[in-house]
Length: 263
Image (cartoon, rainbow, N blue to C red; front, top):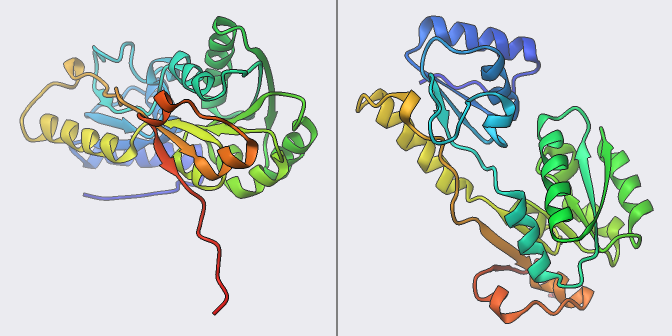
């Protein structure tokens, strides 16, 4: 096993993928950029994807159930309908959402279309703004806080990292997201695939193909059929959000760090 991480550029990704295809029996390419690369550069050896949004839209596979080629793996993709439905259950009075996305990130285009469609379905007013830096994200949050019912941060580093700063900028406007980490940082809620579960699924797929002789073209790309709804109860209390008991029964409750006490 050879592991390379945090490749600096698309050129480095291309060089690594070509090298692996010449020297390895299989390879794993993580993140949406990796899945998109495989869509544009069909591999010559079994290739596994993970940590990516919908690989069908990224072009890596034609169908999640029947990939039909040398690419399979896992995706953290969740139905946007289910995501917005979960947030609507927490915030029954949800009338408008601002989606903040990272410009030029492949996941941004997918979430913009999917979230807007789900908002239309639930009759929620949809707004969006893009950014390329954390500073720009903070400017957007400060400027739009109080103008919408909630702000949704999609799952990529420029938008989702440093959640404590985002929560401070949002004030009394609820922040929503796709990872437990953002809820631990003070966001109200997130619906998230279980990364540990997906990692196990990915390992099983590699074993099935490389050890047991399964064919990638018939091995479905696995998803988390039972994502976790994370709710920060400290934030809910601060914002005066009364989370329905039916939601609390199925959610994973997160609390903020314990306050420091004097020695």
